[in-house]
Amino acid sequence: MTAGRGLMARLVVGELLADLRTWVGAGVVAGTAAAVGAVAACLLQTAAESDAMAAVALYPIAGVVVFFTAVATLVVLSSIAQLTISSQQRSHALWQLIGMNPRQMRVIVLTQLLLVALTGALIGTVLAAPLVLPFCRWVLVGSSGLQGLPLRFGAPAAATVVAVVTLVVTLGGRRAARAASRTSGMALVREADPPLAPMSRRRRVGAVVLAALVVLLVISVRDTPLEQVQVPLMLVGPLVAGVVITLSPLIYAPFLRTWTALVPSHVSASWFLAAHAAAHGTARTSATTSPLVMAVAFSGGLYAATNTVRAAVAVQTGQEPPAPPLQTAVLLIGGPLLLAAIGAAATVFMSGRVRDRESALVRAAGGSHGVVLLGAVWESVIYAVTATVLGLVAVIVTAGVAAWATADAGGFTTPAFGAGAVAATAGAGLLLLLAATVPTTLLALRRDLAPALSVD
Image (cartoon, rainbow, N blue to C red; front, side):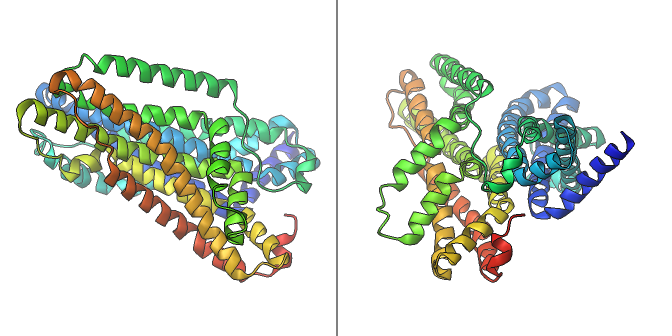
């Protein structure tokens, strides 16, 4: 047993060092999640330790920030954890061949994930600690009565952030760890990019629960006074996006294949390769697309709800209220958007070995460097467009519900769809994907074909 434990310890450390690209990406995302979570923790601690009047004013804001942050954290970290584990199936097959039993393999995988998540969360929290209070002061400038509020972010709050991020990452990888423990030795001769896990019972139950919450929320906002309806309307977009992401095994691949097929394959060889790579690599496609779906839903949904309510107030009173200041938008969705963007870019960076092998195969078949590079660009475009269209589902639902909910109070108003916010989010997401894809592709093109085509 002692020898077994020693081998397990060597595997934990050795595999972390052997595949730094994947684990560093996961650690960066965990650190980003901790930095974003620190803002929510600061607001909660401040509200809990403030006088009653200040707490009443701050708790609603803190609640929305915590909700948005929690949704973003669950989606991004779960996707990262699953991609991190599933992308190393060949290593898991080797572990089985050297005598590791399923329980030992599961322990090794979860230990690796826990170490990386804990390290990333600690570094992210430490780096964020001196910036949290100044940032919160800046974003609260536009909130009436909260400008001079003494903010607090102590060691207990920081420790809670680290613990929550570590727990979410570790729990998010449990299912993938179980799958890793059952990896067959045949994985050594299969492609390195595993298929997306099928629709599980847990996902089906989760989708039903989220859909039920959306229905209950829609029913409740109809009777909510106009001056109070904006906050619940902000929750519609994230919940609808949650339904879409939960149903991703049923939605992503068919939708991606359908819309990319609109471009004939003979038009561009690079487009053909990119479309098939995105459709075939469903695990990494899901991990890249889900954070961007959430980002579009958050930004577009926020402005769809806000602008539709403002239009209803203008119809009722004859005067449109001013738009919320930039600080308010940054406070509510800035952190989740940052986490989503970093998460999406990290998935591209983490799956670099698979991409290197794919580009080497194209070159070995006679494809030029230009075809490979343009294919990488098209693949980023495909991810961004797919995520934007699916995220727009949540935005459209939010706008429609907002127009319906405010009809009695202000008369029918044309729903706003937050087009500017959606375009800005989609554009920023595409730029980040390109920044993660193009440099790594250029580096891959400079390497010899033989090492890239060899089995790890």
